[in-house]
Amino acid sequence: MTPITLARADELADGTLRHARSIDAAPLAVVVMDAGGHPVVVKREDGAGILRVEIATAKAYGALGMGMSSRQIAERAEHQPAFFTSLAAATDGRLAPAAGGVLIRDADGAVLGAIGVSGDTSDVDEACALAALAN
Amino acid sequence: MTPITLARADELADGTLRHARSIDAAPLAVVVMDAGGHPVVVKREDGAGILRVEIATAKAYGALGMGMSSRQIAERAEHQPAFFTSLAAATDGRLAPAAGGVLIRDADGAVLGAIGVSGDTSDVDEACALAALAN
Amino acid sequence: MTPITLARADELADGTLRHARSIDAAPLAVVVMDAGGHPVVVKREDGAGILRVEIATAKAYGALGMGMSSRQIAERAEHQPAFFTSLAAATDGRLAPAAGGVLIRDADGAVLGAIGVSGDTSDVDEACALAALAN
Amino acid sequence: MTPITLARADELADGTLRHARSIDAAPLAVVVMDAGGHPVVVKREDGAGILRVEIATAKAYGALGMGMSSRQIAERAEHQPAFFTSLAAATDGRLAPAAGGVLIRDADGAVLGAIGVSGDTSDVDEACALAALAN
Image 1 (tube, helix red, strand yellow):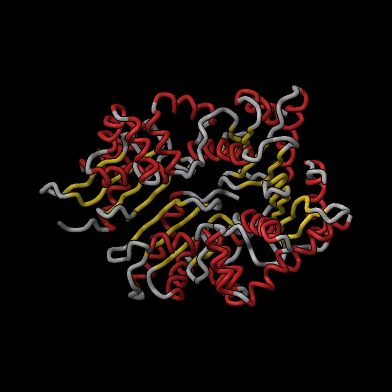
Image 2 (cartoon, rainbow over the protein chains, first blue to last red):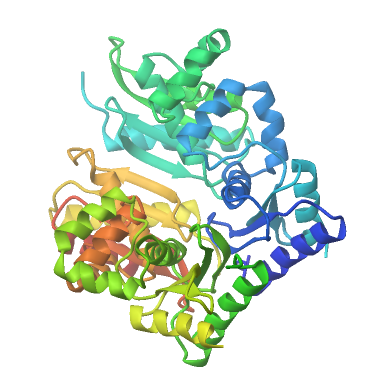
């Protein structure tokens, strides 16, 4: 396992936003974190709301926190609403149960970090992050 | 009542993880607290998400906070969701309504502390803690 | 006044890090904020400590908060230590009195945002931000 | 760089406490964190105060946050008191400027995590962590 570099994180952030422009998504914020949940690159597009970085951060952090995508967290939250409300408080809101937070893994499956995206619908947000990872 | 010792807490943490490995559970975090809700031993297995200690802590703390297992708290939360949402805020999320937090009692039933576990389903988390207590 | 764009913020962040590499500075984090104190671009170099983004953020935010560079804030803090201790609490630490936070102004002097840098000594941190602004 | 394992963290925690007992130190808490500042092993000895884990955590986290030992942070704090007061607030107290927090590095100098110790004087706390690393 190699820690995620600034160069790689920058590529992933740019790849996310390139996909967003190609599908004419709403203005996005993208956060690329290392495996410890610390930001390596953050970018907020012109016109994106001033909380978008925080939301993108909570999606990425939650994915790292639970070891699964924020889409899977959202699915669990539907079945255990009281538990996830308490988790939001327990983690100071660092865990956002909505698609758009995806894990970055190496070839062996080890978690290297996460991408979080916010600005459009959560499905679009996630699609942009996945497009960046696919390249 | 004798306060829980580091030696005993260490046995309980190791017993929890030993059971987890014997049933091939997902990577877990385990927290053993004293009766005051302060950690005595914390262990996080390789590959467990970075919020697992916080979640295990909230399960154990909640059990001590309400004087019942976090499974019983979860059952109550199902019937009083608004109350438990307010408790999440009132307690800064120190109370997680999901199985996996169990009280440690002495032979007379006095509460000595609690074990909290997170990483797999809440049923598996709890089974690991109960296995440690049964030895 | 035109709000700072992602393109411009990205140039400033990259210019800061380019200067840092040219003088062989310690690994840095750089934050470029808009006039509202919200991040537009954040970059953390390989090997920079995990609190460097928070510290760079507090330098930039403080500059915006007081309408002066964080170097000037540090000079004031030396003469009024009790006041700045209370400000640390009042502002939740969003104001770091140490060089490395500089305002971004347009040709008329209007504040467009701020750059915050952390990782080396505060003098080096500030020199990197100023070099980016000079280009 | 290999992430720190539970097995290695457990050895370091036990090594810290073994040294503490051999020199008859006051009861200690020891925290071993991964490079992201997340606890892997925490142990609190019988009789150690209920805030010792939080203090040990702040020493280890601060070392990771600044990329230097908490002893070096303490030395800097003496020269920039206002800055470090603001950092305490900016980081929610995750940075304790007192000896007892030391970085864990691999053979190439890459940071794998940190040990934080609290309970005796900060010099003794640090000596216990260093003794564990020396084995």
